[in-house]
Image (cartoon, rainbow, N blue to C red):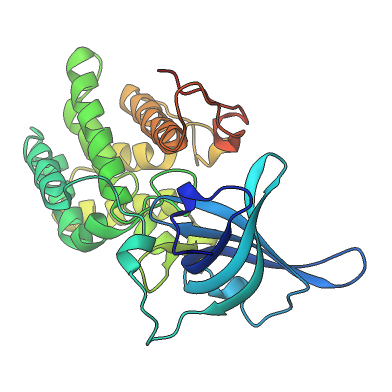
Length: 316
């Protein structure tokens, strides 16, 4: 029996026991009418599917984001490892749980990253755009330092939003210089900094700080709309000219690129177009990073839905 074995080291035939993060859970019913639980277990290094045949509770969907103690055996299901559970319960306060082992955190120096982000913000030449950014940082500093950038798919770990935003600011700064005759650097950097700050209200968070679900306003409005609304409110408070406020809102509302990807409008200025592309580049490269990390040279990943359902290859 392997105890608290890292998920990345789990292999077919192993018996495992220990504490893991319940990333998701869904109560389902077999064809014969018997219940079972389909779940995803996680630790700081990865995730694994799990199933508990004949299980009807009490652990369920509402416990996503909490720590559980499990016992089970590892097998293969459709070419991927899966834990068949025989025991499952929520962790208790007196359990010897090492949460640092379970909660994924961005591979960055948080303080150093935030300091770099504020330096880039301070370099915005346009005083109006810089003022809006400084006001929004004042409101959102704590969240920007700590929250994930997503529920899943990319940067879904603690400080993921900080990592994602800083990566994008670096790209935006470089590309603004490359296309200096076409792109307003101040507008692009401001839109990049603000583009995902609405996620603080879009998500619901577990006690450990991970995203467990979308809030009501997150589902009805979404972070693009909420971010644009708050940017407009901050701009009005600061007396920013109406056209500058409108341009900032446009960047936030269009940064998903197309309506089928969640954009409220299509990008209609150079800075909006570039922001949507920068967002896509950093999101997809993070998906690659996470998928490649557990692979050995010469191996392919499983199919990845967010990368057009393709398998990716780790070369030497």
